[in-house]
Amino acid sequence: MKRILTGGLAALAVFALPALADTAAEPSQSWTPTTFHLDNGMQVVVIPDHRAPVVTHMVWYKVGAVDEAPGKSGIAHLFEHVMFQQTDTLAPGEFDSIVSRNGGQSNAFTSWDYTAYFERVAKEQLGTMMELEADRMVNLVIDDDPEGAFISERDVVKEERRQRIDNNPGVILQEQVLSELWKGHPYEITVIGNMDEVAALTPEDGLNFYHEYYSPENAILVVAGDVSEDEVRTLAEATYGQIVPTGTAHGQRKWRDVPLLTEDDLIVHADPKVRQPVWSRYYNGVSQIRTPHEAYALEVGLEVLGGGMTSRLYQSLVEQQQLAISVSSYAWSDLHDPGPAVISASPAPGVSMDELETAVMAEVELALEEGFTQAEVVRARNKLAATAIYSRDSQSTMANVFGSTLAIGGTIEDVLSYPDEVRAITPDEAIAAVRKIFGPDRHFIEAQLLPSEEGN
Image 1 (cartoon, rainbow, N blue to C red):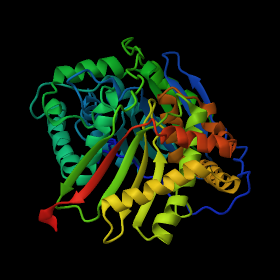
Image 2 (cartoon, one colour):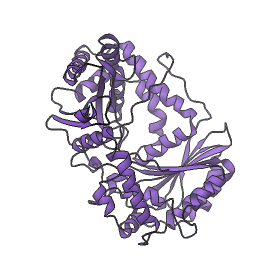
Image 3 (cartoon, rainbow, N blue to C red):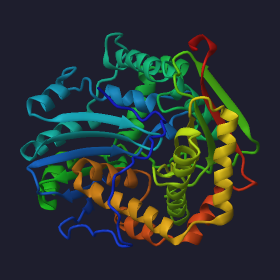
Image 4 (cartoon, one colour):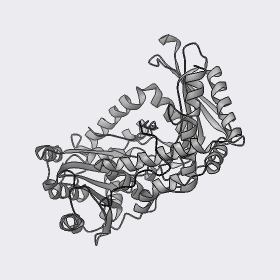
């Protein structure tokens, strides 16, 4: 049931947006998030949405794979599983049962930068959800019982790794590439962890991790839906507000600079299960938190270059030359520390990887030399801005956006100002950002996903 962000580079969604003028629609005036803190340090964000009598209730912990101790990889994600098991007051599985009986949905996910738990229920059940989350914040049962939550869920995670990582050629290759790109950085290890290290995690490791990070001063409550700030404040003070902080959630994250690649590298993975080859180049990118304006400029530039069926790469490689069946470029810029900037393509039948690479990079070099037109940049930045604005129609999406932004050190204003910030990017800024990332002084990791001879 649980969902994990294992480091998969989510392809940028292609939205069929209408052509827009250089000013996208502004949000409704009623869409006004507010925030406050409980006395124990827990931050609360309220996002009113009165279109339906439902709420999305999320608790974000400022801990993820980046914070794991050496040799303890995977414990942040394992905890996501354990949290749905037994507490001092709830039997194993009772948490999910209560949510289901009340007509709700629940789940959780883990990233390098945070761990989040959420429920979507009728507004009348919000208080019950807060009671459940507050209970497992302090009363989780972790012991050395072989049938108990920690050890049994550890085995579940090991099987999850076999199915989601070890049995997927594309994910195996991506794990290898990202490990090289982030070598020496805490992001180097996949969120789900190394198999051997996960297998060696002990209940004592779990108790230490729980006591260090699961405390109200290290958590953010986000409630989006048919509620007011006063309603949320009253319920939150009666539940989360009664929890005494452990004082061990020190907030000293293990974020650091990502060293630039010092040489080009090639990683090839062949597997009988591969039916469609994929060629990619990974470059050191940027982070919206660390260098927001540069990140916005890169997002706009890569949108022009390979952000959809109207992009330069798609029009040239797929439509005109018919050398590829797909091609894209995108920046993974929503982590705290810089993620990769990626160019990726799949060859048309009969086209070799070398032919594809030569054609793609020739188009990239042409763009770097010519620059972008005003019209291309306007279209790209309006698409990005409109996507952000239209996402406000989704209650759960906005709870996710605010929670993830705050969990990595951003602010509500960062979310609110994004459309205006991205629409302010000029053609010169967009091409400058792309030239910097793909410049001749920058190295890259080339990845090739191929069918093996056995599979042909």
